[in-house]
Image (cartoon, rainbow, N blue to C red; front, side, top):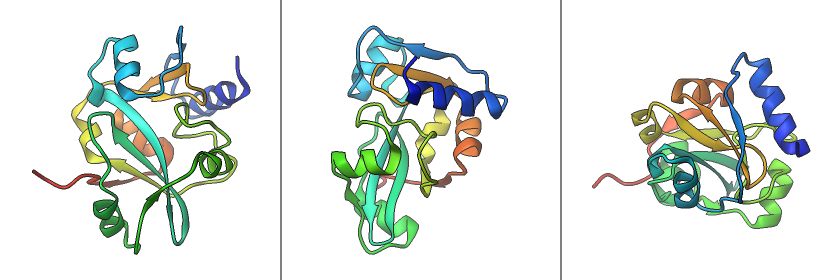
Length: 157
């Protein structure tokens, strides 16, 4: 088991969330790829995306069926601007590669926001630290585990 995956599994176990961590046959760099391999709706994929603000990195947990509107997120969290992090910034903030960023298991806490749309799905799937590993979790458990603040990540309409 990759060290990133082991770290995520330990965090889940310590929280009493004995959800299934799955090793996939191939990496999943998009929500659509993950959904196809898991046999679930794209919206049930909980993407962990790192963005940069003037205050530092933030983690946005978003539904695979949403595109994050950075202006909407900036307004929701009270910062001037939100921009996509570079691959180096993602790895520095999380210790994990793009396509495999888990919502937990980072070297230091990252302010975390969760897409309210994810609550529409009973079972969510999130990356477990590398592109070929995922775990299942409920919306409530994901929100609690990450101490995330619920926000809208896309404009209505």
